[in-house]
Image 1 (cartoon, rainbow, N blue to C red):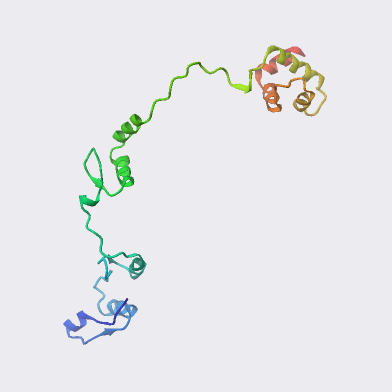
Image 2 (cartoon, rainbow, N blue to C red):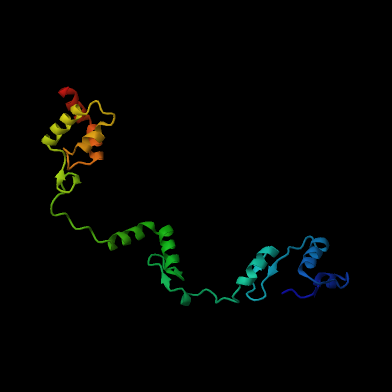
Length: 190
């Protein structure tokens, strides 16, 4: 809170006793009568200095009073490489990320357990449970169905609805019909 004050410079300079009643009047007085003077606003609790009134007013409701001076006692996290101390694990991690990235990456890589090796190499991608790839019989059936439904507007949909390829979805039928090997077989069959 602002208290009515006198201008010390005017008193010392013999200009009289200028007494301001609010902060805006003090700022205006300094700007008009002491233009070479740089105004600073000091928090009465923690003694922080601000160059603008707005910054000081924003600080006042958040001020918790004088803080303890930074010392190693309240900085519990130390960097193993350069022995600097930080108040939080996050601060230490950020320091390591920027100052010692190679060392940090080595430590993190050592902490990750390697994946166990696979006992059996995985087969080709499974399209449906128990079905691996298209069998020659399915390919022949697909070609026959395509010839049968050639006049249909949506050939793949008609093939799927026929129920003669129960292990295959509509998307699988569409995808197979779009492969280059299937198109060659289809052209050779016609």
